Image 1: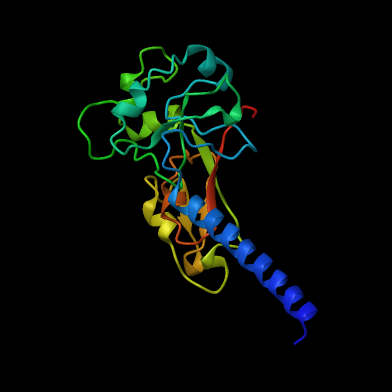
Image 2: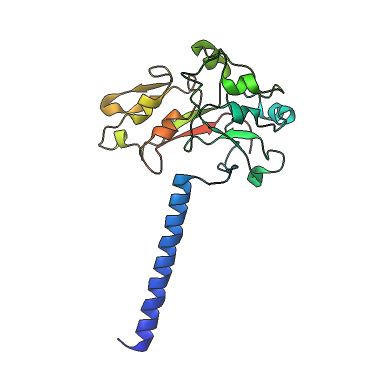
Length: 213
Protein backbone atom coordinates (compact mmCIF):
# COMPACT_ATOMS: atom_id res chain seq x y z
CA UNK A 1 0.00 0.00 0.00
CA UNK A 2 1.46 3.40 -0.95
CA UNK A 3 1.61 6.36 1.43
CA UNK A 4 -1.28 8.22 -0.25
CA UNK A 5 -3.62 5.22 0.05
CA UNK A 6 -2.61 4.68 3.67
CA UNK A 7 -3.41 8.30 4.60
CA UNK A 8 -6.74 8.15 2.74
CA UNK A 9 -7.73 4.90 4.48
CA UNK A 10 -6.61 6.17 7.88
CA UNK A 11 -8.69 9.31 7.48
CA UNK A 12 -11.76 7.29 6.51
CA UNK A 13 -11.29 5.00 9.50
CA UNK A 14 -10.92 7.96 11.83
CA UNK A 15 -14.15 9.51 10.58
CA UNK A 16 -15.97 6.21 10.99
CA UNK A 17 -14.74 5.76 14.56
CA UNK A 18 -15.64 9.33 15.45
CA UNK A 19 -19.08 8.86 13.95
CA UNK A 20 -19.67 5.67 15.94
CA UNK A 21 -18.49 7.35 19.12
CA UNK A 22 -20.86 10.24 18.57
CA UNK A 23 -23.71 7.82 17.80
CA UNK A 24 -22.95 5.75 20.89
CA UNK A 25 -22.81 8.79 23.14
CA UNK A 26 -26.10 9.99 21.72
CA UNK A 27 -27.82 6.64 22.19
CA UNK A 28 -26.54 5.98 25.69
CA UNK A 29 -27.18 9.57 26.72
CA UNK A 30 -30.81 9.26 25.67
CA UNK A 31 -31.18 5.83 27.19
CA UNK A 32 -29.74 6.70 30.59
CA UNK A 33 -31.02 10.24 30.85
CA UNK A 34 -29.17 13.33 31.87
CA UNK A 35 -27.64 13.41 35.36
CA UNK A 36 -28.79 17.00 35.77
CA UNK A 37 -31.94 17.83 37.72
CA UNK A 38 -33.47 19.60 34.72
CA UNK A 39 -33.80 17.61 31.49
CA UNK A 40 -35.14 19.02 28.25
CA UNK A 41 -38.03 17.22 26.57
CA UNK A 42 -38.47 17.19 22.81
CA UNK A 43 -38.80 20.70 21.44
CA UNK A 44 -41.46 19.52 19.00
CA UNK A 45 -44.30 20.09 21.44
CA UNK A 46 -45.22 21.34 24.89
CA UNK A 47 -43.94 19.48 27.96
CA UNK A 48 -45.97 16.78 29.68
CA UNK A 49 -47.24 18.37 32.86
CA UNK A 50 -48.02 16.51 36.10
CA UNK A 51 -51.57 15.23 36.66
CA UNK A 52 -54.24 17.80 37.34
CA UNK A 53 -52.45 20.57 35.44
CA UNK A 54 -54.64 23.41 34.21
CA UNK A 55 -54.36 24.66 30.62
CA UNK A 56 -50.78 25.60 29.70
CA UNK A 57 -51.23 29.37 29.60
CA UNK A 58 -52.95 29.38 32.99
CA UNK A 59 -50.44 26.88 34.32
CA UNK A 60 -47.54 29.18 33.49
CA UNK A 61 -49.24 32.10 35.22
CA UNK A 62 -50.06 30.08 38.34
CA UNK A 63 -46.98 27.89 38.83
CA UNK A 64 -44.57 29.45 41.32
CA UNK A 65 -41.72 26.98 40.63
CA UNK A 66 -41.69 25.84 44.26
CA UNK A 67 -40.98 22.17 43.38
CA UNK A 68 -43.39 20.95 46.05
CA UNK A 69 -45.06 18.70 43.48
CA UNK A 70 -41.71 17.10 42.65
CA UNK A 71 -40.84 16.61 46.31
CA UNK A 72 -44.22 14.94 46.91
CA UNK A 73 -44.00 12.55 43.94
CA UNK A 74 -43.51 8.99 45.28
CA UNK A 75 -42.01 7.85 41.97
CA UNK A 76 -39.61 10.77 41.45
CA UNK A 77 -41.22 11.33 38.07
CA UNK A 78 -41.49 15.12 38.19
CA UNK A 79 -38.52 17.21 37.03
CA UNK A 80 -37.85 20.94 36.57
CA UNK A 81 -37.43 22.12 33.00
CA UNK A 82 -34.17 23.72 32.01
CA UNK A 83 -34.14 26.74 29.73
CA UNK A 84 -34.34 24.89 26.40
CA UNK A 85 -38.04 25.69 26.01
CA UNK A 86 -37.65 29.34 26.97
CA UNK A 87 -37.35 31.26 30.21
CA UNK A 88 -41.12 31.35 30.62
CA UNK A 89 -41.14 27.59 31.19
CA UNK A 90 -37.81 27.34 33.00
CA UNK A 91 -38.03 25.44 36.31
CA UNK A 92 -41.68 24.50 35.78
CA UNK A 93 -42.48 20.82 36.44
CA UNK A 94 -42.81 18.21 33.75
CA UNK A 95 -42.61 14.45 33.27
CA UNK A 96 -40.26 12.58 30.94
CA UNK A 97 -42.03 9.24 30.70
CA UNK A 98 -39.13 7.22 29.27
CA UNK A 99 -37.08 8.17 32.31
CA UNK A 100 -39.82 7.71 34.92
CA UNK A 101 -43.56 7.47 34.47
CA UNK A 102 -46.33 8.80 36.68
CA UNK A 103 -47.67 5.94 38.82
CA UNK A 104 -50.86 7.85 39.73
CA UNK A 105 -49.83 7.30 43.38
CA UNK A 106 -50.90 3.67 43.15
CA UNK A 107 -50.34 1.90 46.47
CA UNK A 108 -49.59 5.07 48.43
CA UNK A 109 -51.53 6.44 51.38
CA UNK A 110 -53.85 9.45 51.28
CA UNK A 111 -56.96 10.31 49.30
CA UNK A 112 -55.41 12.54 46.63
CA UNK A 113 -52.60 12.29 44.09
CA UNK A 114 -49.60 13.55 46.03
CA UNK A 115 -48.44 16.25 43.63
CA UNK A 116 -51.91 17.74 43.28
CA UNK A 117 -52.33 17.80 47.05
CA UNK A 118 -48.98 19.55 47.50
CA UNK A 119 -49.45 22.31 44.91
CA UNK A 120 -50.08 25.62 46.73
CA UNK A 121 -50.92 27.78 43.70
CA UNK A 122 -53.69 25.97 41.85
CA UNK A 123 -51.46 25.15 38.86
CA UNK A 124 -52.38 21.53 39.65
CA UNK A 125 -55.99 20.82 40.55
CA UNK A 126 -56.48 18.34 43.38
CA UNK A 127 -57.33 14.90 42.02
CA UNK A 128 -58.68 12.09 44.15
CA UNK A 129 -57.15 8.63 43.89
CA UNK A 130 -60.33 7.40 42.31
CA UNK A 131 -60.58 5.97 38.80
CA UNK A 132 -63.49 8.20 37.80
CA UNK A 133 -61.84 11.36 39.16
CA UNK A 134 -58.54 10.47 37.49
CA UNK A 135 -60.21 9.85 34.15
CA UNK A 136 -62.08 13.14 34.39
CA UNK A 137 -59.26 15.38 35.62
CA UNK A 138 -55.98 13.86 34.46
CA UNK A 139 -55.02 14.56 30.83
CA UNK A 140 -51.23 14.69 30.75
CA UNK A 141 -51.09 13.38 27.20
CA UNK A 142 -52.06 10.49 25.00
CA UNK A 143 -50.02 7.45 24.02
CA UNK A 144 -49.33 6.93 20.33
CA UNK A 145 -48.04 3.69 18.81
CA UNK A 146 -45.52 3.53 15.97
CA UNK A 147 -46.70 0.42 14.14
CA UNK A 148 -43.44 0.21 12.20
CA UNK A 149 -41.51 -0.20 15.47
CA UNK A 150 -43.93 -2.13 17.69
CA UNK A 151 -42.82 -5.76 17.99
CA UNK A 152 -46.40 -7.04 18.19
CA UNK A 153 -47.10 -5.54 14.77
CA UNK A 154 -43.93 -7.01 13.31
CA UNK A 155 -43.99 -10.79 13.74
CA UNK A 156 -43.38 -10.80 17.50
CA UNK A 157 -45.66 -10.89 20.52
CA UNK A 158 -44.90 -8.47 23.36
CA UNK A 159 -47.67 -6.80 25.38
CA UNK A 160 -45.34 -5.01 27.82
CA UNK A 161 -47.15 -1.69 27.35
CA UNK A 162 -50.55 -3.23 28.10
CA UNK A 163 -49.32 -4.83 31.28
CA UNK A 164 -47.99 -1.45 32.47
CA UNK A 165 -51.22 0.44 31.75
CA UNK A 166 -53.13 1.48 34.91
CA UNK A 167 -56.38 1.36 32.91
CA UNK A 168 -56.10 -1.94 30.99
CA UNK A 169 -59.09 -2.73 28.86
CA UNK A 170 -60.13 0.92 29.02
CA UNK A 171 -57.24 3.12 27.90
CA UNK A 172 -55.52 0.25 26.11
CA UNK A 173 -56.71 -3.02 24.65
CA UNK A 174 -54.90 -5.93 23.02
CA UNK A 175 -55.73 -7.62 19.75
CA UNK A 176 -54.29 -10.69 18.09
CA UNK A 177 -50.58 -11.29 18.77
CA UNK A 178 -50.88 -8.82 21.68
CA UNK A 179 -51.19 -5.89 19.31
CA UNK A 180 -51.95 -2.84 21.48
CA UNK A 181 -54.56 -0.24 20.65
CA UNK A 182 -54.93 3.05 22.54
CA UNK A 183 -58.29 4.62 23.29
CA UNK A 184 -57.28 8.27 23.02
CA UNK A 185 -60.31 9.52 24.92
CA UNK A 186 -59.53 7.27 27.91
CA UNK A 187 -55.72 7.53 28.00
CA UNK A 188 -54.53 9.85 30.80
CA UNK A 189 -50.93 10.04 29.57
CA UNK A 190 -49.24 8.59 32.65
CA UNK A 191 -46.40 7.20 30.51
CA UNK A 192 -46.35 3.73 32.04
CA UNK A 193 -46.53 2.18 28.59
CA UNK A 194 -43.66 4.29 27.25
CA UNK A 195 -41.52 3.49 30.26
CA UNK A 196 -42.24 -0.24 29.91
CA UNK A 197 -41.66 -0.51 26.15
CA UNK A 198 -38.77 -2.89 25.53
CA UNK A 199 -38.11 -1.50 22.04
CA UNK A 200 -35.45 1.16 21.46
CA UNK A 201 -36.25 3.61 20.11
CA UNK A 202 -39.54 2.99 21.89
CA UNK A 203 -42.56 2.06 19.81
CA UNK A 204 -45.01 3.93 22.02
CA UNK A 205 -44.69 7.51 23.21
CA UNK A 206 -46.88 9.88 25.18
CA UNK A 207 -47.62 13.08 23.31
CA UNK A 208 -48.82 16.11 25.31
CA UNK A 209 -52.40 17.21 24.86
CA UNK A 210 -52.99 20.71 23.51
CA UNK A 211 -50.77 23.71 24.09
CA UNK A 212 -47.97 25.04 21.91
CA UNK A 213 -44.23 24.73 22.17
